[in-house]
Amino acid sequence: MINIQTIGIQVLAADAPPPQSFGEVLMGFLPFLLFLAALYFFFIAPQRKIQKEREKLQSALAVGDEVVLSNGIYGKVYHLKEDRVTIELESGRMTVHKSAIFGKAEDGAKAIQA
Image (tube, rainbow, N blue to C red):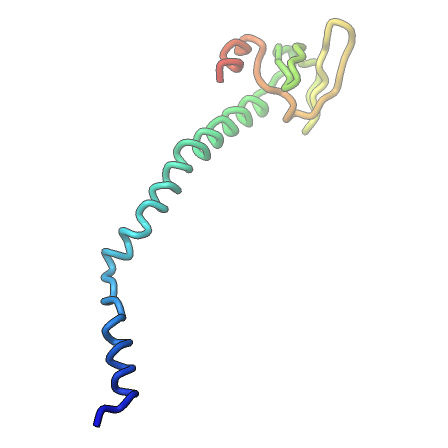
């Protein structure tokens, strides 16, 4: 006599896929890993490089340097404090945060291309 449980177990066992090997699992994640690597090399790494260059420029500022602010204002460094810079303009002076300095005035053409 055939037991219904036996038939049910045989049907379930026949439908189960074979276990995947480690290589098959790795190949499933490969497109995702390649996407993450491309994301890093095309977006994150260049931005980190630009940020380091900007921080280096901001820390190397000296009185008398001609600079360009991030909003396009040109001026000459008049006074430096820890995180503030006083810029001398044609019409007066303006104090800005050091992070507002985009680059040196001589490098203006290069900064626009970047």
